[in-house]
Image (cartoon, rainbow, N blue to C red; front, top):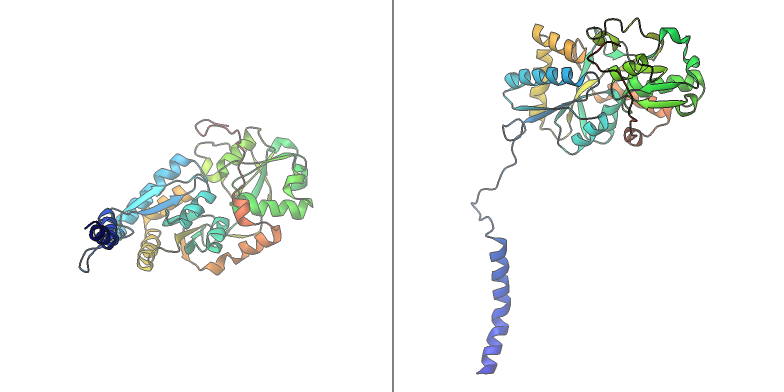
Length: 327
């Protein structure tokens, strides 16, 4: 009898173990069982996430981008959400992770995101009738500095490691006209974190020179009416392809097409023109392809930098004046 029970236990043990495993895992979906679907981008459960890096006053930028997103929500019938990342590098990282769907990107940030296979350009910004712009190098008029070479051994403020007009192209000017890399040409360099912040650092005396796009001071005149009297341009960069609107690579094509059409149409309306000008300083959009930014990649090659490593450089804190009071 004992032998019979032992034999029976050996036979039943595997079946019992399998039954317990199935019970622990829960019932699997049957042939007709519903499978949970991933929320559609633009649905209330998964809004389109729109990102903009604070290249100027963050409060004003946030308000403007939120208004643009509201207009897009009405035009497309999709749900939208706005996020303001701390840097272009953070924006690219989030796009690659699928956390940001649409972003206003600087040329270098786009080049990095595209090379990583994370972004597709939708629209290039227009300044007047041009899809290109320039960077500038500023000093204080009372500094006695009249050209770039006069900044040798001085303190200098760049904007963001992934800003073409506020970092890469000015660095190329230093290399070409000063004959040295910025790290040896200047006594000290910092990343201010915004074009307005770099200019305010200059006016406040924290640095002797600053880079920005031409002309970042226009948007600052409402708060700082004498900003152009307190600064002067001593050099400008070659033409740079404008900033753009890009989507993450994996955004469904039909969503991307709908957003491109809606944003293009919005940029031709009176309300859209005013909002884009007040928020981003641009006059409209032009449909372009990835090859439009090839000159940016060429500048990267000439500068001999690795964009991925360059983007991760830590921006040193830069003292600057409060945007609520005059310099």
